[in-house]
Length: 139
Image 1: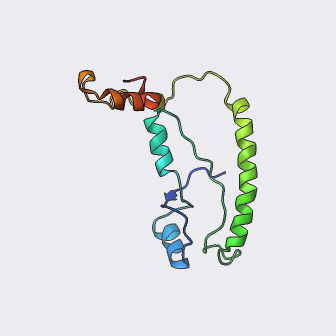
Image 2: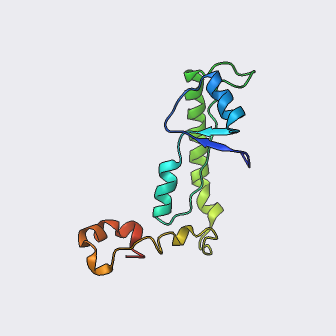
Image 3: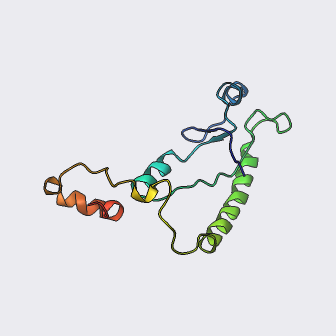
């Protein structure tokens, strides 16, 4: 489990060169490089959902002296194992999370309270209907 440190998010899957890895780690100070989370985190916030990422390592990029170059075959095998671990985690979540929870201390469950500025009488009814699933509480 990664705790603390610096996380660098990039768009889409990529294999970094040794020079890029050294830049991410040395110049930018990144400890972990992730290739998702940005759209998911924004969408969760708009839906007033708390969001946590479960990051499972697939490779050491090209910086680790004992691991050599990134190999797609090994990454795919690691992904398959990570998928099994992810399914096990999802199965265990209801018991871990329990039922009712208090209000979110970070305000996730109230993120939209001041987000809609359009006066109620000026709102398009069709747009309001489409947004009901995520913003019905404030519409």
